[in-house]
Image (tube, rainbow, N blue to C red):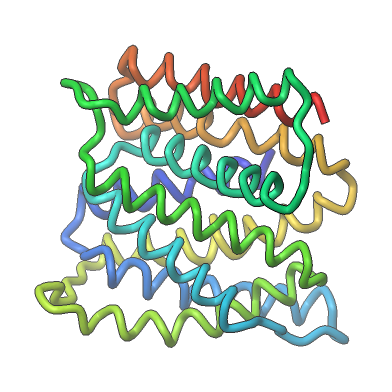
Length: 267
């Protein structure tokens, strides 16, 4: 549960920083990745003196794509909407790759998959309470990047060492994003504080706790537990950020999370 709170905290901290302070999304991403790299390196050294960071360029680029899309999207998306789109995109990406590689769905799984897709389409359909198109697309890209990062991470082994290495690679590469025309760096102490907390606490320590917990969880249980992240984000968004819960968001969340739960549980 601590890891799920940390993952939800990423959305809350990012949204609060970009909506409530003057920090720009690219600077937030850079600080988040750098502080996450520092904390993960310390955790790796303390918990496994024999392991060293072992990232790869493709995984580092996927991590950077996720982090950039995440920050850029949260300039306009609410914490709950962003978390739901991100989670849906991650799951659809991973399930689609599985189907492409030969996984077979049962009839209930197909029903769950199409229910989740219908919920995502309903959330993104034009309307008064629909999220803005570009931020929603950016969050979807972030989810797809994280989906591929997760798939590649399963093959890499030693998840803590791999993630540490990828953060160490992605952090310096993210400096290039500051060169994007029209995106001048803008920092303030509150925004920097939120970015450091996001990188060090909810990313660095959150991932470390999650990888430790995975050793004691079945894959199906781990996937099911992650369904709680958008729900926790929505509840805390209402409590801490005074965000509204629209009927569209509630109905789409029920369809997306219920559909994905059906796919997972019918394996």
